[in-house]
Structures are given as structure tokens and as C-alpha cells.
Image 1 (spheres, rainbow, N blue to C red):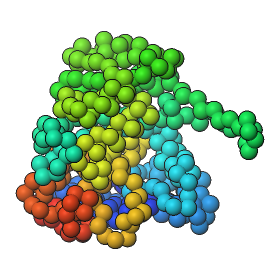
Image 2: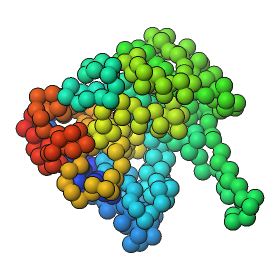
Image 3: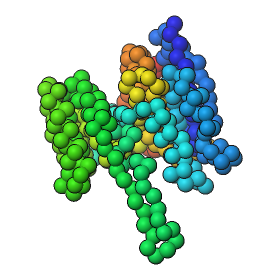
Image 4: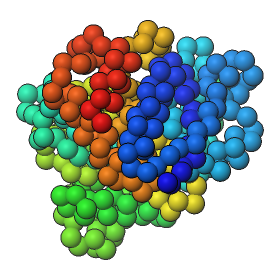
Length: 351
């Protein structure tokens, strides 16, 4: 039996409710596929920040390094500014472990109504690939003349040839395994340095992937096309900011951000990769037991695939699809009345 060491960071809000659900699914499907898991849970969160002054300890990355993967619940809670929680936990992990690819699959499931009339089940199935460690989310910049009328803030975007090329190669390779189509998100008509550079590198890398057809769209037009015709897309690749915005928009197109998963990948395997639902901590429903666990469960399925167990991962996503297609069990965000526990129990039965 193969054993994997998994670091659990439930985090804040509903993260503490959906991570246990994902763990139950992992254990159930693992038992059928000869895979076991050794878990270690970390209480790193906004609650820890309020209690101890930091989201995680100084040696946090060293504690995580020995694990095969990380499963994160959610980060963020009232009383701790979002930039403090993000830069105190998520971004140090992503950058310290060179998780330079963020992957967010988008799929309209049978039984989940998209707000778009044209987004029928089976017709929308694409992936947003986001550059995850540089781009617009750099640490270069600062504030000057704080509190004075001439106060200013400067934030620099950083695009390196190595950083852009590696995420483009991942996206082109993924497209080659799927339908062979790639769309690049750009804004080179308005952002005069970084985006033309991005476009040039897309064209260069495309030459190394001749089996993939590709095009590029300005981010504003691309956002509109996500709404008008999401069926046309296969793999969409974008910078840190563009990929972040597009993937949340795409999750809404799919019917609920509560379903959406994400993987923060170090493709080389030199460091552990991290998997997380996109929905955030949802403090308004935290503690009520009604959080949708699908985003965390789908993220766990992506983790299984990354760890080399694609059949087990498919079993999980098939069970998800079966619950949505063949039952009326829904959490409130999907228009139902089921609790997190009831939904998870139904999904486990489908396994």
C-alpha cells in the first residue's frame, strides 16, 4: 500500500468544515485503491494571527517541507486585513515552494444550473492556468508621504522570461492532452511593456507545441466571451492577476464558486504542491454546518491525480457528478437544504 504524508491547514471559517469532509473522501477512495494517508494538521489561520501575531510560525515552511502535499481549507476572517492573511500564509507557501502553476478546472455539471442559458451540462469544460508567483502580485513597491495630501503608492509588476515560459509550457502541454486549443489572456493594447513581452513569449513557446492551436484575447474582451460563449474554451492561460479574476468569473459561470477547486503546483516535485477550494472562508455561514464541501473534495481529487493516482481521482469526480445528476441533495448555495454532513454522506455512498 502506498502511503502519502498530507499536511492539513483547515484555516478559517468554513475551511474547518470542508477539510474534514475531503479527508473522509480521501480515506474512503484510498482504501479501495491501495492508498493510505498520514495526516498532520496545522492551526495556521487568522485566529492564530490574532492570538500570536502571525499566520504561521517562522519555521512553517520547514514543517511543511516533509509532506507530499498540502490540503488547505480557507484563509481570511473579519479583524485581519486580507493582505495580512494572504501574505502571511498563502503567498509564502506558493513562493517558498515554487508553486508557479495555479490550475483551476471549470465544468458545468448535470444538475447544477448555470446562470447562462447557453452553458448546458457537458458543454462547458475548460481549465484556467494562472501564473502563480510573479506578475502583478510582486513585492516591489511601497508607500510614500503617508498621511499627506501627496501620498502615493507604487506597485511594480514583474514578468521574467523564465517565469512566463515555464507556465506557458505547462499550459501548452495540458492543452495537447485535452482538445488542443489554448487561449492567452493579454492586454498589450494598454499595458505597454509587460503584456507585449508576454505575447512575444506565447508566440515563441507555441512554436515548440505545434499540435496546439492558439489565439490571444484582451482581458476585457475575454471576460465578455466567458459569459457570452464559455463553450469555446479549452485551456486559458494568464498572468497572476488575469488568471485570478478569470477563474473566479468562470466558477460563477459553472453555477457556484462553492464547487470550484484549485491546485498550486510545483510540477517538478521538488517541493510539496498545495490544493485548495476557491470559495474562501465565508464567515457569514461559518459554524452553521451548511458549507458546500465540493470545492474541497474536488481539490482533494486533484491532489490524488498529482500524487499519481488518476483512477482514484476519477472515482471521486464521478461520485461528485453522480450526486449532482441523480439526487436532489444540495447545500444551500446550490438551492438545497442539505448540510455539509448530509452532502458528504451521500457522496461517500456514491463511492
